[in-house]
Image (cartoon, rainbow, N blue to C red; front, side, top):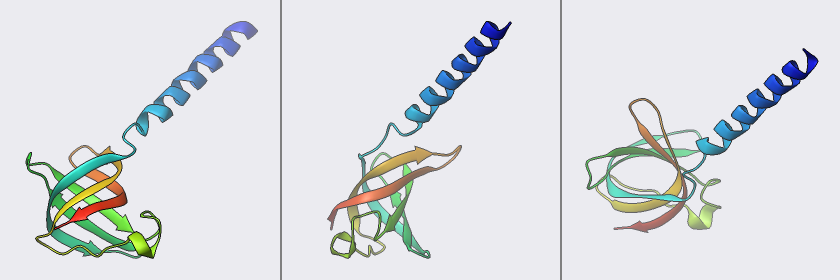
Length: 105
């Protein structure tokens, strides 16, 4: 009985570790598109990006996440941008925590 409890615990622990490592598999992914709106926040802002593939991403941009003020840019509505960062999805929204602003046109 003790062995069964130990094996069950190890299986649950392995499942937890595997699920945690697969949640962050999109580090350093890229998103490109047009800025449709901007919402200011406490430490930066969130820009709504529409891609050419008709996808919508909410890009969280802050000085800390892009590596300091020398890499930070304030986007404007209408800018065409290329961003890199960590992508995650909720049930109905795509998000990217921006770590690099690649280009702004």
